[in-house]
Length: 342
Image 1 (spheres, rainbow, N blue to C red):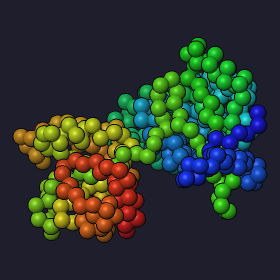
Image 2 (cartoon, rainbow, N blue to C red):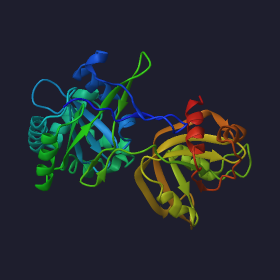
Image 3 (cartoon, rainbow, N blue to C red):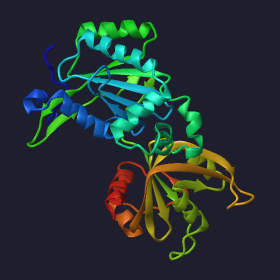
Image 4 (cartoon, helix red, strand yellow):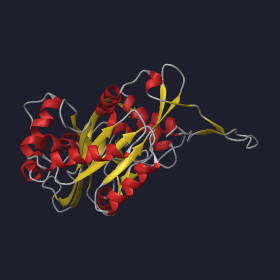
């Protein structure tokens, strides 16, 4: 099926007809399927979702090109092609699903260790670390990992026969989906990759730019971290201990970008919200209901992004309450400035 432009240049005057952006291909840019596979192995989470942990990449033999787990422990099998989609590609990825269906947790653990080159940490423990569940739950998760499969065929466009085949298999309960990408010419030495959002039977795995939140550490004095701030930094989490903030932290979605903000100081740490959250009384804060939200990719800034820099980057002044989601692009801009800080 020939490539058809899906991105159009539209003049701001609104007077000119839309002009299609020139469609290209991986081959025209000297990329092989293996190079695409290697790139996605390293960058799938940035391109698709922070809700994916890549655990495997194809080796000789029958194996999906990319294998990943989501935060519910469900397995995602990706078959990559640098050409347009064909119905036979669906059969290929379904065959892989059949093979993975016969695997035990020990088999998945071996796959992970071989691909990651890490012989000291089990898959179950690495999974809990990645999604913030806590190492004490590794044994329980080990029994659940990879039991349900989602099948994705990644191709340079797709044809009507493939779409009809997908509809057939979906009607019969198979979680399978084509995921057609497009390559466009771009300014050298780059190429442009267009990926649509990815849904399978109503489950959304790809996501738009993640939300951004400030969580105030409740400092009383500029030079003295509060007990709450010390807890957040040592436990790599966001924390609130009073209503309505307990519920607001609990509702921060997994994958959201979280900045810990100290009054009169600025952003002191950053992290990504995980599904791991709990409302309970903590011994450090007796008599109070508390909510902890575990953060991964946690980073304590050696040099805080100052309050003045936050206002300058956001182009507005804030009174940062306990939990706050900046509007428009302000949160994104402040986040980008914070992660550039040493």
